Image (cartoon, rainbow, N blue to C red):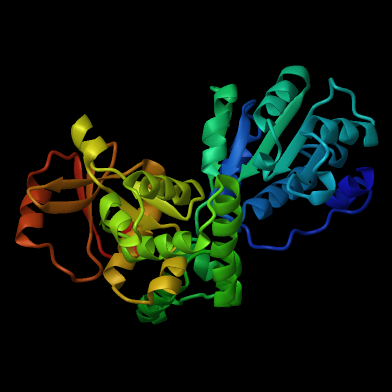
Length: 386
């Protein structure tokens, strides 16, 4: 185990090396703020969205800025086959032994893909109760986190890493738009909607990368973990989800199309949501309306959606992007008298998304202006989200 840990942590015995990748200021600053928080930090989000890079960049800054000595910091990927027989506690004990660190000395534990370890939640609780530790753990499965975090109730803080924003996309592509060339921004933005915000895909442009990402999630995170034998059905289910992105989603209809029971279709829907491949938005209203009404579906990334459905319906793609920007606010949708308004935020802000000059229908305009809200906004371009 010692050799494996040294490979993961070259800063223990050598000079600090730059981390490959491009910084994402919003996520970086949030993680930096939480490092002094005694709670366990869970970094969540879609596979390959940049969680590992976020952790390694945080380690680099901590050592560079003398927040901690290099020997106080452990990074390890817990899905490593070479470590499958070792518990988290075993790994931490070996780390302390290698670096001659007492249990009373503060250490920083960056535990990538923590849900690969059985009873990880009990081990994290034991570590926080018995040692001086600051734990930063990543996970790509919301279901495994939801089912286990009860052991850490009130003792964890979540940071979800999202796909790149348009501004971050331009940074990744090293595109600078001069004021005199502002007319080019629309073309670049539509390229962005088609490409999406998965960092490695933005840089490579290889569609096989996205296909492999989705296949990995379907095969490893859903089929294997949830004992689903018919992977073909899962793939067909996902394609229908992408076709319905941005719309209300009927579990009964998809069950009929794929010849599944409604309960099975509902379970599959939850599986895809738990892997962050899709997001579900509930209807705003009374309790029975929120529970019984169909949810709206949004893709985790517009590039993934375009890969499976083609680059069409720019207005719907833009709405999907706006949702991803608003997701942290837990938006709901409004539906009254067969008329829909896209988003309603907890602070009572009403938002309708209309790409460029697309008008509101008369029924939408009436509902938009009459619905009880503290603020009303029509989002037509990326700048309207600032």
